[in-house]
Amino acid sequence: MAKTKELSKDTRNKIVDLHQVGKTESAIGKQLGLKKSTVGAIIRKWKTYKTTDNLPRSGAPRKISPRGVKMITRTVSKNPRTTRGDLVNDLQRAGTKVTKPTISNTLRRQGLKSCSARRVPLLKPVHVQARLKFAREHLDDPDEDWENVIWSDETKIELFGKNSTRRVWRTKNAELHPKNTIPTVKHGGGNIMLWGCFSAKGPGRLIRVKERMNGAMYREILSENLLPSARALKMKRGWVFQHDNDPKHTARATKEWLRKKHFKVLEWPSQSPDLNPIENLWRELKVRVAQRQPQNITALEEICMEEWAKIPATVCENLVKTYRKRLTSVIANKGYITKYCDKLLLLTKYLFSTIICK
Image (cartoon, rainbow, N blue to C red; front, side, top):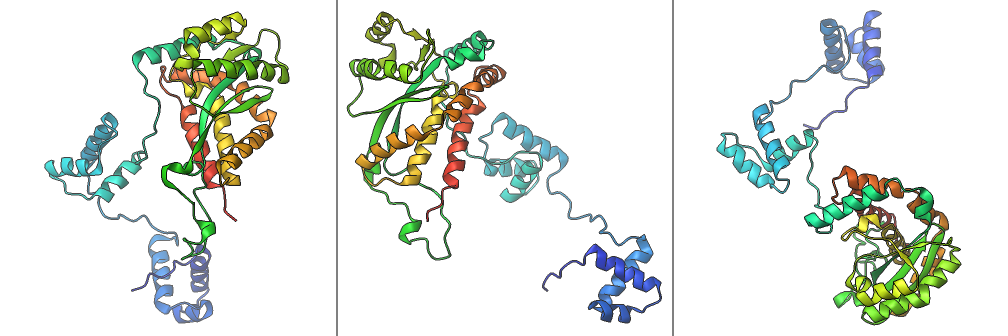
């Protein structure tokens, strides 16, 4: 039997009002276009309970006892990678037979849901301690100090693959229409490596690294692009340079070169992408490039340069202005990866999901 639509509260109240003025169930049904049996049920309910509201329903009893709920909740709290099948077997050994959907519903009521595990950098104890030390030492630094930092990094952008649009609006059975598909080729279709920098005043230079980078090439990149970026960004005297602990960056020759050039270098904790705001700019760039859908490596490089230059200075300013929050998060998370690493992934997913192929 098909499920009937529930009467609105106003309709139920009208039935009671008409009954109270002396109208019969048949007359009420004709006037409101309802079955006599429906009218009678509403009137009987009102006579018995003095209300037309929905009454609490007992429903079927829970298959998992409160003790069982505590058991499976405790299990997944200790080991979040426990599968539903494991929990079904645990309960079955305890004398309770349930299905996997029942497990999901029970844990959801406890505020737990199955999610994809985030991929984050591997942190050894030495990394955790270094991150905590960095955060505590710089937590009280004034905002002006962070505004005087030039942040840098390298990134790879693929022609096809991760940077392509992921979602489209389409009609049924139109999934293979060219405008609704993502072209792919073996091995990703190629990629380019970029080096870039920025400060609170806006993006600095962005260049393509055409060969495998080594220490000598890295020093050449800095020589040709770091000082020009500082001048273009009108950095104050005594500005600080940031780069991570890649072996090319920490090589003795590179350190000596930076010392001779009198560059102040920010001491950096390894495995800390969530502390480098340039990661947010890389994702901003990749989303902008994906929207334009370059079809070859030459176009990919040109579009990267164009879109990097278009990133508003206000975006850079806001990333640096909130830097203290990153440090606070590291301390609150006892040195482990923070929500800012998560936000980078979520930002990418959100922006990709809003791209619509026209």
